[in-house]
Image 1 (tube, one colour):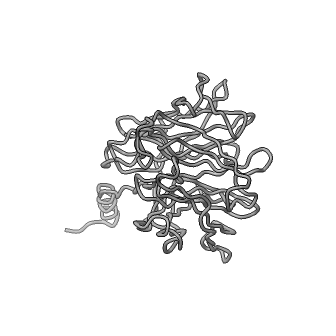
Image 2 (image 1 turned 180 degrees about the horizontal axis):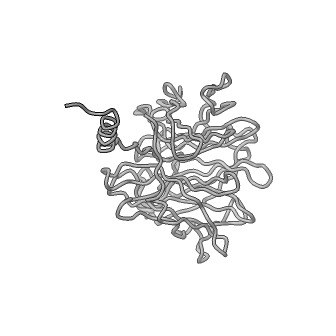
Image 3 (image 1 turned 120 degrees about the vertical axis):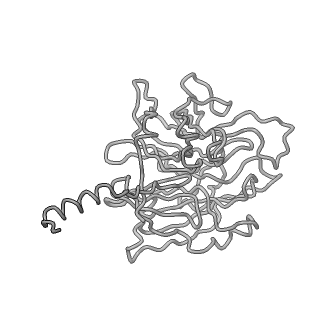
Amino acid sequence: MSFSRSKILAALGLCLALAPVAAARQIDVHDPVMAKEGDTFYLFSTGPGITLYSSTDMKTWSRRGRVFPGDPAWAKSVAPSFNGHIWAPDVVRHQGLYYLYYSVSAFGKNTSAIGLTINKTLDPSSPDYRWEDQGIVLRSVPQRDLWNAIDPAVIADENGTLWMSFGSFWGGLKLVKLSPDGKSVAEPQEWHTLAKRERSVLVDDADPGPAQLEAPFIFRRGDYYYLFVSWDKCCRGAESDYKMVVGRSRSVTGPYVDRLGRDLAQGGGTLLLEGNAEWAGVGHNSVYRFDGRDWIVFHAYETADGGLQKLKIAELTWDSGDWPVVDPAALNTYVGTVKE
């Protein structure tokens, strides 16, 4: 029996069509932050040495290694149990350089510190690419401090002054003025409380307590500074009930109030986005303006994948009262993949 060339090709095409196609793997990251240099987006996240990815469309990502090939030299002096897992980075451009703030901590304790490393470029292929660690910016100590030195996010106000928001649980989220070079707390020191949730005075000061909030991020738009905060529990897979709330202020130092005028430092907060049946919890967001549009970047726990955290990026729009809006459908429409 003989077959024509056309029939063989047709049969081969049918086989290829019926063959299973490997699904692209979604990018799984915790606590994502981004920056754009040239035409490329760079994504940093919690992980061993701080994981780094790049993309030209915010959808398909390439692995670009780690910020720290080893451990920060000072890490174990702050947290003796440190295992190379660096938390919650933030990246900003300051004085022509890229500043990457990051956290070292013992889980569930405020044995923590925020560090800083600096680079001329975010492109690992550039001859100028080299992270230079600047050491500790701020440190919290159990029984001394009723706040936790993690989850940094830095913003320059209308005068160019740098401020760092940070914190989780304990006595709430804080804001501190930084020195002009961004490497230390400014002197004389200026501190503010941004947000709190209820905590009994009887809870031991070394205990995070029930005041479940963390990951502040301040974004300036028009006449307002917007404070984004994550409420409730992260990091529990499909049992996570993480959600994002927001308040705003005309001053970077606050007070930040929600739609109903409630102060976030007194338990207020307007719900921005929460999880659904497919995505158990959403949170730890950052916000950016790229090419004339505003974007919110965060992670969500996918129920169908054992609660594994996945990257989410959604356009941030604004209602008639200048409050931010996120379409809940974005949880299912955005799919970020990583090249293997």
